[in-house]
Length: 364
Image (cartoon, rainbow, N blue to C red):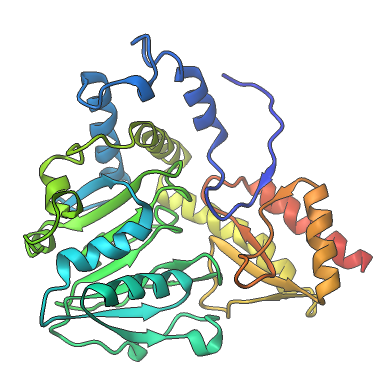
């Protein structure tokens, strides 16, 4: 199905852009999925047709992301926010400590939830620097007997991202990868667990992916409510209760799209090119635009910047909106501007923004 449709320059931070091909395929199959006479949304999650969708999505993610055999892939609900609670509930036992690296608002929230459930400490923080950078590995302060070390791999609000990940040895490393999962190759074996809300790079909101090492899973507490236990969902192949079936179907279609682009490596190369278009304009603007994140910590997913002065910034955002750019306002907690350039955001959208930024500077 090739229909010419008017598409906004969608730079929303999440929920965010989905590949047009995926949306059109979903549109085709919305009423009648593969001759079943009904939508995926209407099917029993126990049906043969849905089981194929579910199983294929798990298998495709494992293959695309080179997930080792000793890991489970779970499809849960509640977003990363529920994971902030489930993680310590399952793995932070009495007498243990969990160490959290603070690099932005979401890592603060994860830490806050852990503190409710057990002994959590801050392993490192860049808050004093207004979260402009990711801490150096030698700044991380944790102990060999910690329950786990938690990081947030990409920080949507401040526009910083871990370029490389620490090796925590025998201490389990856990990452919230909600906003950069599948945007670049990752050595999954470094992590005891990765979790991610789908609504940035994987599909629509409603699905949360958890990639968890089986050995780590075996250490989970048994004294956890059934629905909040990772073991429950691993044992039942994420079908303990009704999963977000349509979201998982969409996630599977997004994974097929990533494959068609050439896989994660090809997507990563394109993401670097897209981000460079915008960062190059910021760097060449002689201070007209100022990036928030320091070089070396810059996010390829969320480009945060300010315009020379407050009135000009308001004008910039107003004119950008008129020109068809959506979602360029910075997060309400920090202000400024933010361009989110996730996997499905086309190169052409980033090129258009770069050109708009150059033209706006030239006018002012």
